[in-house]
Picture 1 (cartoon, rainbow, N blue to C red):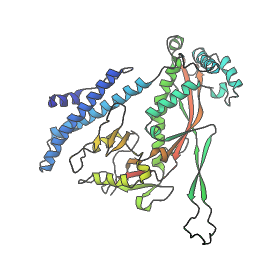
Picture 2: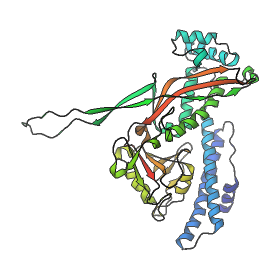
Picture 3: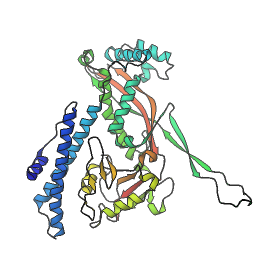
Picture 4: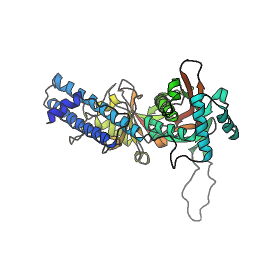
Length: 424
């Protein structure tokens, strides 16, 4: 029976339905767990041969790699089914219609998107003293669409899902932080109290940059009354926004985009100072130590202060995750564990693991693994308002919808994130 499960996990591909129901999600999760059981059996066979000083045969190694890849594909398919299942309808319904003004905005926006009639929408934004202009910058989408895009981005963008998110109405968020607190000390009841030094404050700045997507629609799609154009726009732009955000939050250089946490200078953990991220070296260029590889992971965990470890997560790409999935501790337990239930994260050594494809691969001098409390360490800044500009001229016969939002990001606490550098 187990051999049949292994064969099935090597060849099975998970079909992602448009919207997975509860039974489909449960079946996909069961398949994922069966694949993990098959992976453990095949990897145990490989490790047993290594322990006996016998090189594992090529077929065993290839089997482990195939099942590992299948496990990744099934996990990604399961995540996509959960995201699609969680998407609510943006159409008007009892209890969601909101205020009269909100409904008026939704109707005016739909008229603009379908037919290009901007008169009603322009009147609404003039009454609201909007800071944008229709002909130049587009029109603000209804609040329901903006909320839905932001909520879906939190599910699609790995760093946003963990980071603190702040909404601002201006172009830059300025956040003060204390470099050094006031001098303090113990004194006796009748001792003199010398004057203490004042705390020193500095300022972090998080400018917001413009992020855009430009989905295209045909005239027949816009004329079809059964098509929810608001849902269509949010679905079209969310993936494009999430992909660009994810890359910028990790490695962006801060020029016309957020600054990623890997763009900041790093320093060996024993020499850590504010303004730099601390890192630990694996001791092997481009890889983990051949023996006791888990020791460097333990050291990375405990390089983080206790207050940050309570909410810490691992961040790495799927190739790094596949490599760590093969590791065991000295008691023979796998360090990587699958999610306990549908919708939860996989874990590594008891801490949640977040997969981010934009993290670098395990290579010489690469910081391929991050560990920390990203809610305290990284700040995402969203400027309120998502804008849509309808363009029926540039790509006739298609209608383009130039959709923009402004977002920034950067490190707000340099002590909350640590990196594992694959260096000697």
